[in-house]
Amino acid sequence: MGSKTHTKQGNCMCKYSDHGKTHNPQNLVVCELNTQGLAPKDPCFGTYKYYTTNYICIPAETSVTCHGGYSYLKCGDRIQINTANYGRTDKTTCSEGRPNEQLQNSNCYSPNALAPVSKSCNGLESCEVFATHTVFTDPCFGIYKYLAISYYCLPPGPDV
Image (cartoon, rainbow, N blue to C red; front, side, top):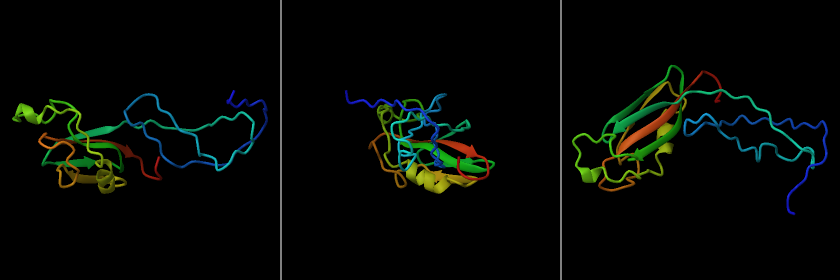
């Protein structure tokens, strides 16, 4: 009860293409594409449908910069930022010479880190981002932070 049963089979096509981009946020070998909203309306109500797509796998590059430093990103073509965090997710990165109490919170995430990094870098061959709380929200006062960025080097042309 409550589930839809598609019993019709037929030759029905939706001529809609999504030129949006889907990236693999955690460098996984499997990813999902949400197909809800791809077509403006159901072209054949009650008929079973499938979605065919083409994709390419682009390896992600990473950059880690300790607080107060500059992160320099460089690609042969275009940069596309995947993820960015200004905070701390482990106790060892950027820990040299730091007191233990500045390293204890390894669950420190800046909610706004992606936007300024993307704005500074997306579509460019190179960029630099200053790793400091004057650029990013300070998500955990008293903890020594670093900027971790994952990005792709896209080939020339339209976004993937």
